[in-house]
Every structure is written in structure tokens, then in C-alpha cells.
Length: 287
Image (cartoon, rainbow, N blue to C red; front, top):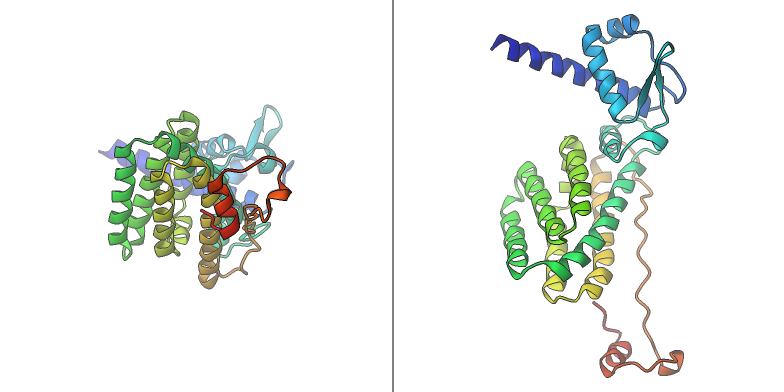
């Protein structure tokens, strides 16, 4: 029991030391090319043992933030060149708590934009490949999420579970592995989790619209609809976050996608169109 408790204490100390060093790097207090202080000095500054410090720097090395160089010390790296997507969560967490970082809340916009880009193709593939049972499970899951609007933590846990249902329905291992990274990013940063809850009712409305498209088995329309719906969702989410954030609202990259082209006359096309497409063109109906 004592050994387990000691190990847990050391892991906690190593995580705190890594978090402090990570923040110094991400806010720019430690710049690319600089060296960390010597092991003895740094362990004293952070109030940890040398063994704990080595564990902390190993974590940062795995994240692409530092690199030990034999005979020279530990160098700070440029995380834009060596870091992974997991760092987006740490950056967003710092921004949401008011810590000044380069770009401020713009990093949250980057996270939203990445999520949107991946989601559009995942929805398209799931529309083509999901079984009827899988689509039914998605619909039931969204209905269950409506019962959790008063519980942010439970809602976000089930929100990630809903996203996993879509990703799994793509039958694409690469999407699943990328999604695992997103899950680690969100779950490891509670502030990011709560930020995404800021617009929960609208989130569920978007899911229901997307499921309508998916159940129609029209992958092309699903891919056309998803960017517009997710754009509106991200815009209102950013507005909601800005109301409680200590930092100015970000100029997030959530410009509206270009509207689908509407053909006004047949003379604009050299190829004949089907009667159904002609009706949609005259009435301006879109998915």
C-alpha cells in the first residue's frame, strides 16, 4: 500500500513539474533554442527530486517540446515544428483560463477548425458505410444526451461517445486513431471540455440534422450539409465562450463555407441536367 501511494505521489509531482515547464514553453517564457537550467537548479526551483524532474522532462520530450542533447543539456524545441495535436488542448486550456499565450483564443478556433474538417469526411463515410443498426444507435444516443443538459461533465462524456459511434461507422482505422488523439486532448483539459458544452442544445440540433442526411444515404448531400451546420455551431460556440472568457473573443477561422452553386438557366451548362436537378435549380432548394 505504501509503495503504491509513493508511486502515485511521485507521478503527481512529475505531472505538476511537467505542466509548469510546458506552460513556460507554450507562453514563450522559454524560447526555442534555449536550454533548460541544470538538473540541480531546476529540481530545486520546481521543488522536486532529480528523479521526478527526469520523469517530467521525459514527458515533455514525448510531446515534442524539449530534446536532451548529450553533453549539452536539454534544449527547448519549436513546438510548431515538433509538437503534436495533443498540444492544442494544453494551449486552449491556458487561453480559456486567461493565461496570455501567442494568438490567445485563436488556438481554440484552430481546434474547432480541425474538428470540423475531420467531421465532414467522417459523416460522409459513415453515411455510405454505417449499418441501419449503427444509425439507430446514433439516434438513440442523441436522445439520451438530451437528458444530460444539466450535467456538463456527463454530457461531454457522452458527446465524445456519440462522435466515436460516427467514427467507428466509417470503418476506417486511421479515423479511429486520430479520434483517440482528440479524446485525449479534450479529456485531459477540463476547461476545453466545458467550453464545448457552452452550446449543448444547438449541438444536439446539428446532430439530428446530420442524422437525417445520413439516414437518407445521400453521402454527397451529407458532405454538403455538414460544413454549413458545423460552421453555424462553431460560430455560436465561440460567441458563448467569449461571454465567460477573460480574453477577447477570437477572430476564429469559421468563415461561412461557400454556398452551393445554384444554376439559374440551362445555358450556363453545356451538359444536360436531369429533371430533378432542374427543379432544384429553379426552386433554389438545397440540402
